[in-house]
Picture 1 (cartoon, rainbow, N blue to C red):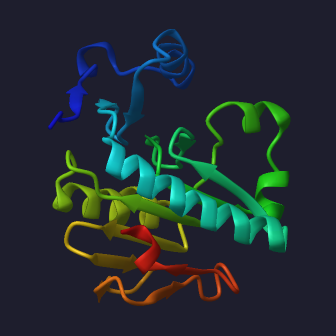
Picture 2 (cartoon, one colour):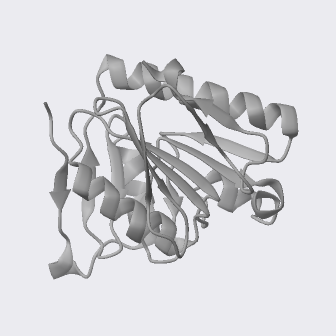
Length: 194
């Protein structure tokens, strides 16, 4: 199992937004994230099982979005520039249409400067649960995400996060998750993720 590598640039004052974007462009075979403190995280690739499940999640989310035409969906290769300064990439994301359309074409082409309305993080073999939970609380919910699901397929457990509420725990993959008010009509059949 490969672990993420964290680099610190504190002695140089950190990388600017443009410098970080250039680092990502210059190294297209690597996946980078940046914390709000300016640390650069080199993310490991996922294994086949995680990739398969992530593809299914994006298929279901994109299918719902195409039917409703209510926003835009994004896969795990999309990074978002958050208000905290962090640049993060969820495994799946959705942004309401009116928020996406307010961005300039340049902003849409780069790391979009907004927090998605909805994200999914899928725990892979290399992810520590506590670190993912902290990432969701601080980076996603703390920057304005309205609904986040942390899916742990090995434990068949989902943690549901909303602003100003304690996380909910859903045990077992014999049920459906609802997008509620954030994603009206969207349901994810957890049994499809096995």
